[in-house]
Amino acid sequence: PVIDRDAARRAYDDDRAHVFHSWSAQGALTPMVVAAAQGCWLWDGEGNRYLDFSSQLVNTNIGHQHPAVVAAIQEQAGRLCTIAPQHANDVRSEAARLVTERAPQGLDHVFFTNGGAEAIENAVRMARLHTGRRKVLSRYRSYHGHTQAAIHLTGDPRRWPNDSGAEGVVHFVGPFLYRSQFHATTEAEESERALAHLAHVVEMEGPATIAAIVLETIPGTAGIMTPPPGYLAGVRELCDRHGILLILDEVMAGFGRTGEWFALDGIDGGVTPDLIAFAKGVNSGYVPLGGVILSNAVYETFRERPYPGGLTYSGHPLACAAAVATIRAMEQDGIVDHARRIGQDVLGPGLRELAARHAVIGEVRGRGVFWALELVADRETREPLVPYNASGAAAKPMNDLVAACKRRGLLPFVNMNRLHVVPPCIVTEAEARLGLRLLDEALAEVFGG
Ligand code: PLP
Image (cartoon, rainbow, N blue to C red; front, top):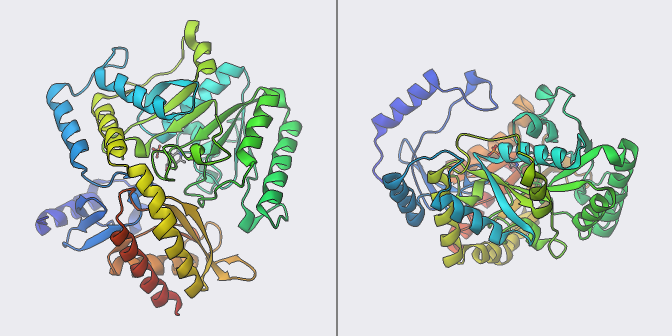
């Protein structure tokens, strides 16, 4: 692409003068101007090229500027840009059908939102109305979004300054063998003990007060910890025993990321939740879209009784046209299977090779195009390379690593002491290998070896 450097400089200046950014102290920001993007690649305002191993916020599953999706949005814009949610609309109807066809049996309806947090917000509202109960359980080491219920459910430090203590959320410890809180040494032990802990929390909180248990099928930003065999099935069973709904958050893990349409398809033979929250990969974020997929039992609750919620842009035609084109393209091009194979054949083995060479890598975990490197100060003690919620000087080693990656034209995703390798699902073998090589060099520069 041709990069207009003057336009990029103006973009930077206007940004600093007028744009208020998420999650940040505004004063110290030096945002990279992104002038163009294509597939797995980005160009900054100087014309430097980057391989996007972050998929932005782990959402551009189909890559940037997929021609079929761009054309679908253009065609829809020429035909009908917007329509209120009470009307029926062809692309909204088709998007709902395509999404539910990929969900487990018995989840046949979609409530569309503009993103993931709103999906969680509405899933929790539905669960509370369906059960007549208020309390909701979620795990530490999770992220569910920044709106009221979603940020209270979140089990990471972003909740702390937002926590009113009044949302009826109780947190529990989920399975994470590498940092087991249950003194487990095997996946089987971790699964069993994490389930026993959750059963205890349910018992102590009062099962009849709990509307739902909310889990990311595979926690994403919190560290990409695939639950050990039996855990999700065990949570499902616990929910069934007490009339508690299971809400699975597939916002980050869904739509190809794990090499499955939904991450839940690849775990315990496919656990069926009562509600699924999705967003991001459903249309790779080309136009904001999220939603809740409802079980038929929850749907029945609102057959006679009105659902007390709605959004002006629920099922926005531009977003739904993008979703229809994205899902069709992923199906036609075999993108979900491709993501699984890249994980099995290239990223998994390649990252384990990096771990063999770099002592700073304590653990490699993931599947598909959804991988985390757990970076440690000491492999024996597993002390994290930077403390939980490190900022400023304490976060320096991670910042140095990001800078070393970017100097080489690689854009990684980092959170606390972890570097996540989360390229678009369409990443080619050659691109994946190039990214691994650049990461190898960056690790060597910052940590030696
Ligand atoms: N749930 C999960 C698992 C997420 O990763 C995110 C965003 O990263 C959200 C919910 C919130 O989605 P959004 O930022 O679209 O509101």
